Length: 313
Image (cartoon, rainbow, N blue to C red; front, side, top):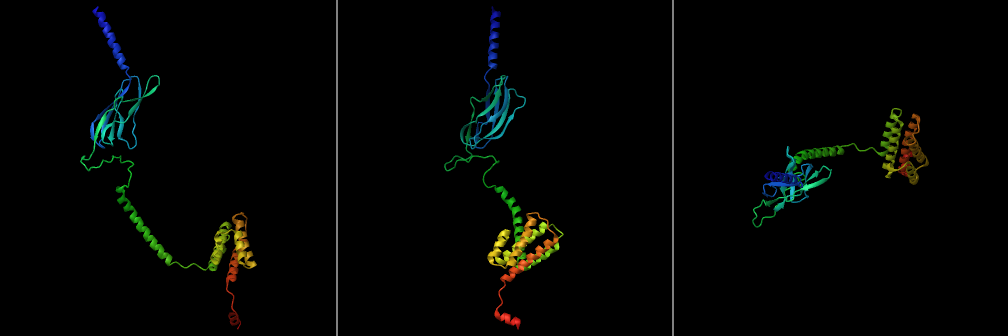
């Protein structure tokens, strides 16, 4: 009889132990120290308990921006521990009794089901102010992590000044030298003289460079001359608008035709890709020069009768 009772007791104890091994998994949290000041680090040990057949994931800490806690280290898995355990460091940002933030870990069973395992009773930490607490003290400002600090980075002011001041001095010296060079620059040629100089240069380049380049400079030079001589925005006008300008100003028919012929040659080469002989380019340069001289004659003041008598006498 005694032996039967002993065997029954052993079987009941084994059943109780087996039932205890199949308890629900839970995450146990331990903190050290339990009383700190604002911003002081708090070490947290998170240990998984129960569920020997579970596959554990990574530890997750739920933090709110600007909340009562900030993560300053970890989580780091403790090697060689089964079920797993992790260590991490938190910093309290508010005074008073602060319960730890929600800390969870994912666990998967043999059937592939995943559940979030957390702490049933997370511990709390008593947080005191860094100030004395006497009357007149203001509430402590929350401590922020150095990464992403807002405001003016005063520690960069001196290095930036060391770099920017020489650059500013060099820029000022260059600007003064530029002003002196501009003051001593040779005055611009009169409009017709500038056109004559361009015509001589282009005549020397014909046959030695592509016709498109010669025509580009010829058209631009004629437009610049007309703009300087008339005050009209000729450099922004199309060839058709230049012909309208000549007609509106009442220039001689020969001058109007010369302007039209020069622009026809230049536009045909530049936009129509029309082949042109060197002789035709030389003639276009001469026509541009003749057009400029025709405009000068049109703007020349008429001779008075006294001047005519003196010239004839």
